[in-house]
Image (tube, rainbow, N blue to C red):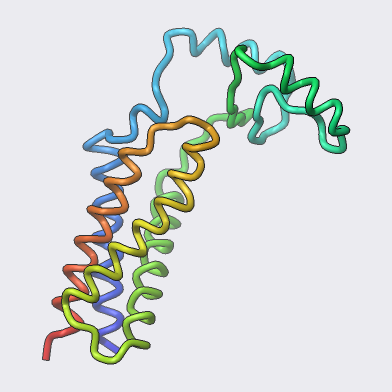
Length: 180
């Protein structure tokens, strides 16, 4: 059991540190949250609409619209601007809480990886590394990359996150879990 707990803690720490480097020090995700010099004007304009906290895709028909209404909006929107808006009425910074939640997620993810390895018959170093990379790549393909297909985003940083973080976790677990 101590092998699982230590493996999970160190693996979670590896993920957590990579995420800090990727999103913070390395600023690899800047293009996913770019700056615009018009930010004050945009926020003032959005505030005038009294939006509720939420995520919006513009343009979009209201829920319950007919297929004809959907088709008409699609045709009217072709070639025009569109936006995805994540709107919150109040900027708050809860870095401690967010970091704790992030570490708990990393802990659970590595714990589940170790559980998977526990179901295998004596996985070797290479199998553990390749399985971790596969899980990271599956996550990237089915979340970040799939979203980029529909919403035309740049996901190179997400791909790097999947490969680097899960590759290093795999190397750690491959060594740790195969120690005598």
